[in-house]
Amino acid sequence: MIELLNVSKEYEGGVKALDGITLSFGEGEVVVLKGMSGSGKSSMLSLIAGLSKPTEGEVIVDTKHISKLADHFATGFRRENIGMIFQKYNLIADLSVKENILLPLVPLNLKGGELEKRLSKELKQFNLLDKKDTQVKKLSGGEQQRCAIARANINNPKIILADEPTANLDEKLSLEFIESLREMKSEKRTIIISTHDPLFFDLDFVDRVIEVRHGKVL
Image (cartoon, rainbow, N blue to C red; front, side, top):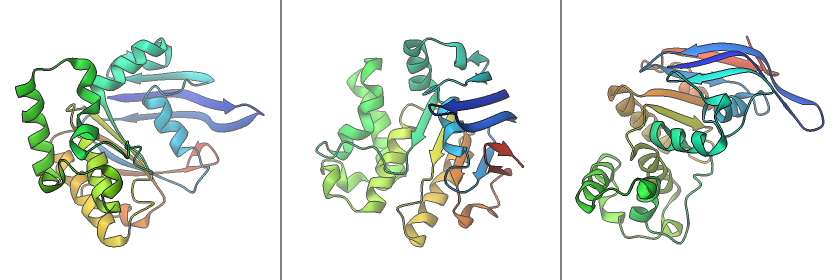
């Protein structure tokens, strides 16, 4: 599903975030990228999502050489194939739960019936039915996280990328998030989680834990 071939990423000032990474991720696999802040985990997710391009090497996602796509093609590919869950949720505070969840579908021009069908599924799955019309800024942290997961899931992506998803959650909410991931794995999604949260390291549904340090895979 995903291949990184001798990938390096260097930022302005000569800061090397990734250094010659070669990795592959199988379809339906759940992989945890383990490492402290600054180890290169988030940079790897950014490259897989097509949000940035490698300084060297190639990134191939579902047979597409995403690292070589023009930005507007990369955006379209990401919208159709990848769901992203961010540490700070990246929700629009003044919009309702419903509006936030449906945002990724706006460019697809789906009919109203299909929109409602997809929305209803996500609201039920992530226990947000009673919050549908509530502004996001009025939600608790756990509710905002569930809204962010539902938004990532709404376009039925093949791939879910989660960047430090429990950094702002207590243990109870973190465990609830983990159960949401378990359910998404049952839907055959490929899931990559960047984290240094030890709750993820011994989960029975995680296929691999890969340690990243100073831009290299250990």
